[in-house]
Image (cartoon, rainbow, N blue to C red; front, side, top):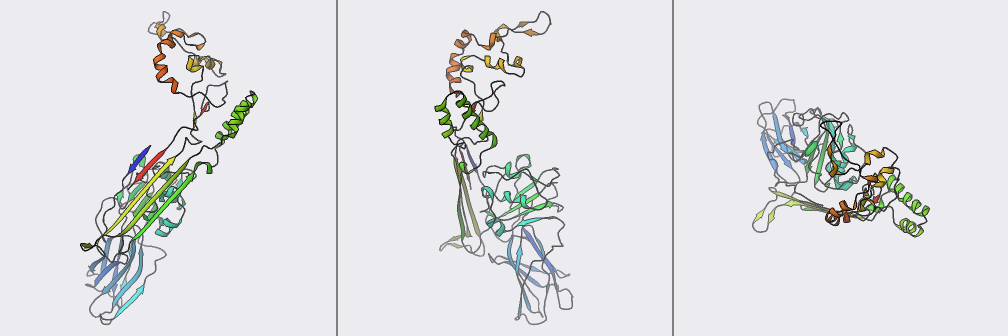
Length: 450
């Protein structure tokens, strides 16, 4: 099975408008003099220190400024006004959907004089009414993430309910990767990537972003803010990595072997029952061969990624430093394995069934009458019940030779592809899920995402 998924991210400047739940942030605040009076007309410059991209603002009559639509990352804010020393506030770190107040107090003096202050993040952001958790870039990079998808880390956020224990997910497993809620099971979640809607079918995510392309992820458990308020569930906002003035890159490969996993209970049960049954029948060679076969079939998977970011540069033609940047990401997966132990149990017809003999179904303990076969050519009106019809039962559930002759072409082109049962099953009940273990059937996957 092959899957191809494309995720596009645009060239990045300091701010650009998009629709949906915006993952960008805001720096705002007031500029005051030492006595607490506001300073209108002060020049404010907000700079992303990774890209040197900046925005220039003028404070209002109330001394207020606001810089919206900022990409998450490190920032500095510089303020200057005639009669005051220039003030630079550095070390400001914006997270996804942050709204950070950075108010400044200018000292009386000359513009040629400068004061630099290193900011510290506040313990509580009093400007927000929502609650949740931000997985910053270090957490995304360093925490172990199943199948390299950042969404497996959602379960560790306060207030998040998970649908079950972590499982081995592929990058295509959007249903399993979306099994989170607030515990109330009301409504659905809202998923966004770079402000664009990432909702798939059934309110699941449409894409499982890899940790190699994600800069930050925010999980909101109470979505009071208007941009998230159209959902009663979780709000999951992902911000992908942006380019900076320096080139950066990562490459990874994750290897997995099926035989490294523990065997499920019923797989082991069927395995040992089959060996015991063969020994009880005196078929010692077959029992030894079955015992030599591993419970877990062989299988392997490789998941690899490549991520490159930096400024767009064409030597002697264009230099995008401080202006234009790129991000490229590729993720591929190949699973080469047979059916998994939890899924390779199959129901197949017995050797006698394929010859037209279904008498074994009449010997099951529970309601054998429901397995009685009837002759479709004998249908006729029921004289005792007008409007109803009756048919003749096929004696002992064995199809007549003439029927088998009519179905020879169908048999040759279809039934011959059914394998014979290779596993013990209880003959007192109808076969359920264990007459055939398809341990050699291929169950391969290929996935590519750009």
